[in-house]
Length: 424
Ligand SMILES: *Cc1c(COP(=O)(O)O)cnc(C)c1O
Image (cartoon, rainbow, N blue to C red):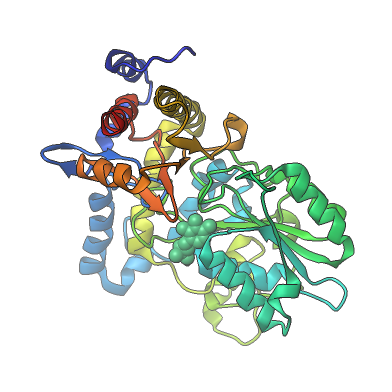
């Protein structure tokens, strides 16, 4: 498409947008009486207006039914988590029995590493991206130490080449091959939180399997953002949070995926709890753990229903919009944002900024990470004062993520206009 940097053009794109009505389903934070340009859906997605009603339903049932709500609530609490299997299978691309909603992201990462990181004397390394999200780094490091190993010799980080910001797939694959038989686990983000780079999960999984290792992904920045086909890509496991692109509220309940070839395998070690126990005999309360032969077999505790109600409210909206329409709009939004930023930069002799997120739409999601070559902090602070909610990462990166459910093309135009006015 031939984009133009004008308000009329942006409004024209909004008028033609089949998802334009969805913005009205969300509370948009306000600045001086008008809508903020909210570009941090990659950090905390906005609240859907139906959220209160969904949570209220559970509060009302709790008030009127007490413990009986486990069976008699409008949405019985006992099997509450089961409603997510279908919804999430469409978002992450898997079978319904391969996905479960439970805990929070870092907890799930640990639980899945208990199952899929089982180092031996010969095969013990973890291959990951350099500058993974800190919580993931701490999880890797503490798991390695838990097994009595030394992180420096065990965790192999793949870094960008000198002068580059993102990873080349060929480099990731060659590091996996190079370490070959010593690799126990290849564990990457789906989309890197800092650069916004979308990794080639299919190729990484294939390379991990070729050397006999498991492949897992942290999809915090990918779930609800980019196209995923976890089952078809043969990914062994994955986990994600629900409060970024899935709009389910701060600290919301998280998700986990385990490939169907593993879910029935009782021999896979795991940290167990009663909610992972076979449903028909769970309440016999007997000794000896018998896992449910689905991803639910990894559950520990009973469902946090209030948090799940918010998740359900948000996912009902995703379902109504449909993932394929969301992907289409997402690509157009990111494309327009790249265009606007490049226009601004050209006017300034390409001296003010560098987009470090890949240009290729197959290698990115919503997020665009802008490395400010000068006046970064000043630009960021002025944007904030003028009602743009973006995110600053040291030393010099502004991250923005226009999301298809509630951002508009006009948001992007306004963002560009403010940057332009700061620089001139
Ligand atoms: C946001 C994010 C987290 C946060 O973890 P929580 O356990 O939800 O606090 C972890 N890893 C990645 C890659 C993230 O982007």
